[in-house]
Each structure stands twice: as structure tokens, then as C-alpha cells.
Length: 400
Image 1 (cartoon, rainbow, N blue to C red):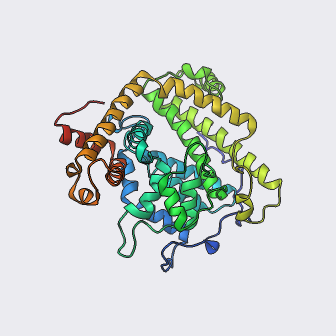
Image 2 (spheres, one colour; image 1 turned 90 degrees about the vertical axis):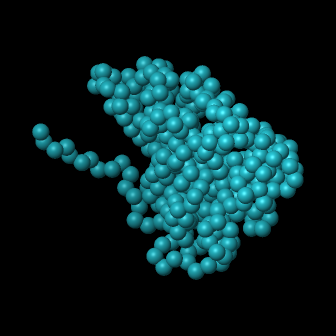
Image 3 (cartoon, rainbow, N blue to C red; image 1 turned 135 degrees about the vertical axis):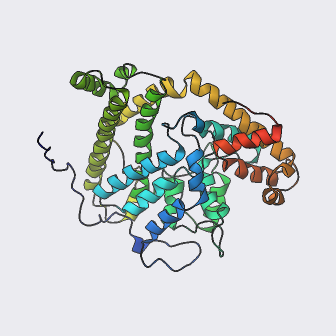
């Protein structure tokens, strides 16, 4: 059989950085002054600090959609973050942005998530409503500025301003509205302003879009493997439907793994090509000369075209009904909420049930200081550890 011919790429990576790319030499620096690395840029150093953090390692056992122990195929927060980072870096390369910063924000974007995915966050937010609630982006900021203890001279990871900005604002500006700005963000912003009212640099915007692309694709993969819906069901889905029909017409009855592979690679290519094309079109329409010009815009500069964006929203709605609201997923997530709520109430009323170092940080039972400590303790748990703690505290097991 003859070897296949390699076709030229659709997008050739530029040889120089774009004028609106974030530049390490222009970084606003770190909160605590320290010598920079002789072998890495400040953003690649940030990436390495995140990868070596305890919070990043714990993502291995934190739910994406399915509870972690349900199967080896399903994504966790760790595998999701790696997929987001791969997409973000690839897109940043084509757009001539700082690849290291895009990858860093992508790797860090889920650090603050609780055990049991969004169900755990909802439960912890409800349990702490009278103490400020819970927000995973705010908790991620707290993790990398306070809770991580790896260095002798400061708390946290001492990341650059641009990485912190991207972590906090990758989904857009943060302004006080119907929902107040989370306390950890307010507190840190008072010490070192993150320009909350502006959009972040393009690297963070690309990381946010990479997050969307990754979870749309891997949720289809996981949902098919979990038999929450079938390949035939996807014929009704926006964007994916015509792709499924084309795959079946070309290859017939493939084994499931190959069918999933074809669906995911075609869908991912469709989304990434549109993102690069539309973002490039918007950037070429105006003479952006610096990252400050990007931050000054009234809207995001990285995004899908209007027509594809509408289809993506429709696909998300399809997935919400077929997957996220599926009885199997809802049942385990409701039980997971019960675990988080019960642990918060138990630890808040009796801080002595916490490990000694956490107990010492508490105030009186059920006061605001204790609630804050308990909130941080539970937010840091993996799925497995939360279930173990539930068994230790209540002397019984709960099946999710």
C-alpha cells in the first residue's frame, strides 16, 4: 500500500509574535519580587509551578461529569485540563500569541473546583450562602495566592499578574451586579488590582474558548461510552448530525471507539478552524498595536462566528438534556450534593472533626471564620477523599 501524502496545513504558524500578544518582557511581574528563571520565560515558569502544585494533582480524582470511580474511560478535571491546554496552545501558536501563557491559564482554569463537579459546587455554594457562598474561580485564586504552601518566603505560588488575570477573568470582565464579586477576588484585587472591569489578554480568551471546545467534544465521547445516548441520537444534534451521517455513509457500521474518534476529530476541527478564522478576521479589522488595545475592547476578540456560535449553543442545549439531565447522572449528583452538605454541617458545628492544622485555623463552631476554613477544606477534596471523610465522620458509606 502506498504511503499517504502529507497535505500542507490550513494555517501556517507565524514566525513572529503578533503586536497584540502578551510579552514576557512586559509582564507586570509577581506580587513578591524574586529572581526570574535563567532558562524559562515567566509564563512557562508559572505553568511549571501549576503542574507541580498539590491542587493540580488533585484534579486527577475530581469529577468532570461522571463520578471518578465509575470508569477509566471518563474524563476527570485533570484530563479535561490537559485537553484544554493542548487546544489553547495550538490556537495561540497560529494566532502568534504567547503559547506558554495560553497553556498556563488553561491548565489552571479548573483548579478551584470542588469534588463531584458542578453538583459539589452548587451544594457548597448553598451551604455557605450566608458566609459569601462559593465560586470556583475565586477559590482558584485563593489556592494560588494563599493556600498552596510550597515556598519558604511566601504563601501561594507567586504567579505573574497576567496569569492571575487570566485565571480570574478568562470568562470576561468581573463587575458588581445582581451577584456580588466573590470575597477572595475582592480581597486580592484590593492588594494588587487585576483590572476587573476589562477583558483579559487574548491568551486567556483563547483558553476560555479551548475550554468550550474540549468539553463539548469529550462530553459527547463520554456520553456515548456511558450509553446515555446513541450515535443514532446524535443525528438530531446541531453540527454533529451531518457529520454522523457522513461517517456512517462512508464507513458503515464501525466499532464504537472508531465512530467516536471520527465524530470528535471532525467536530473539533470544525470548531477550531472557525475559532481561528473568526478571531483572525476580527483582529485584522482593526489596527491592534498592543495587549492594552485588546483589553480596552468592549467585547471578547476570540470567539466563533455568529452562525457557528448559534449552533454551538444549540448543541450545548441538546447535550444538557441528553446527558447532564440524564437520570443516571442526576441521581449520583444529587447524592454527591448530600455528601458535601452533610460534611459542611458536621465540620462547621464541630471543627474538632477536621485535621489538627485545619482545626487550629477555625474560630468558634458555626461562625464565619470556621465556615471559611471548612469551605476551603471541602473544596480541596477529591471525590474519593470526600467519600472517605463522609464514612469517617458518619460511620457509614454512601453509594453514588
